[in-house]
Length: 139
Image 1: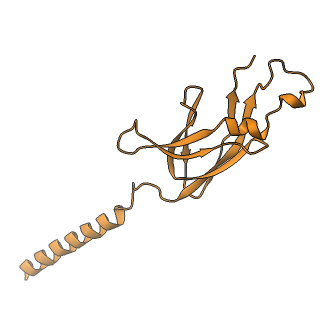
Image 2: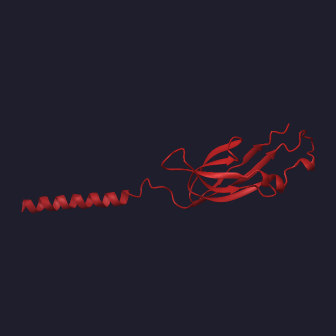
Image 3: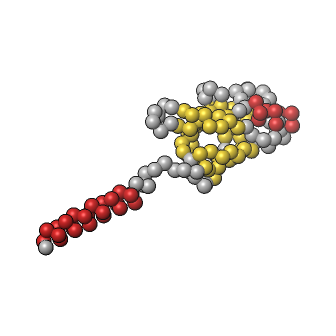
């Protein structure tokens, strides 16, 4: 009889361990789903001399925003140096942008990333507000 109790106890703990592994296997998994990245892009200066009030000809236009295309590169999970291009975006005629990205860590770059490069995290089902300032270098 004590042999049966020992076997039953062993089966109980084995079943308990299997159930615990199944329940805990979801912990630490990568986030799934998408999140939103949105904000405003400021580009300037457009003219070599700023005036007060600003000269309307020196304000960014739709064409200005289109010329400064940004790219969102997802940081690879295996090789930390691996970047996977997920999206490109520009500001609208007012400099606003909104894109959907898979949840994860991203490097946002302008061109080759030498002029503008930032790292940001995107969480599933959430909106991340992030404004971007681009210095044209015009003086």
